[in-house]
Amino acid sequence: MNTVLNWVSGTFIILGALLALTAAIGIVRFSDTLLRMHAATKPQVIGLNLVLAGTCLRVYDDPNVWMLVLVGLFTLLTAPVIAHLIGRTAYREQRHRKIPLAVNELGDKMDEQQ
Image (cartoon, rainbow, N blue to C red):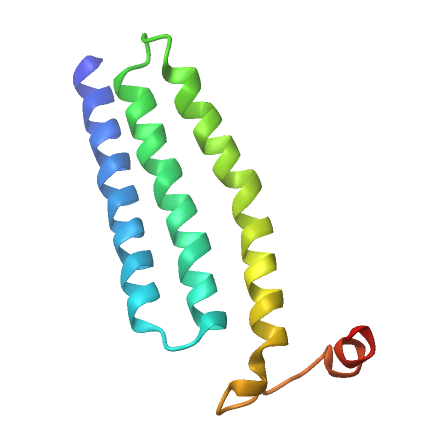
């Protein structure tokens, strides 16, 4: 049983590390803030939670496992808020973009708020 948990734990940690790596590559490679926002939130959060789940499986009898669970929950709660604020700021500052958005659903509403 312990060998199976080690394999599952290792698989989760490796998959999480690969997702975090793709997030880092996306942040470096994408040219725009709106594009980077996706790479900075979704794969990074899922990758971190996979690494934390693998670590929890590895040290399941340690009392500090609950700290890992809290870190995962905190990340899941704060990442959408941060992505929303970054996206909103990038949208407001898009007047310096060379290529405008294809569909601008908030065009008139943002002009009224400012």
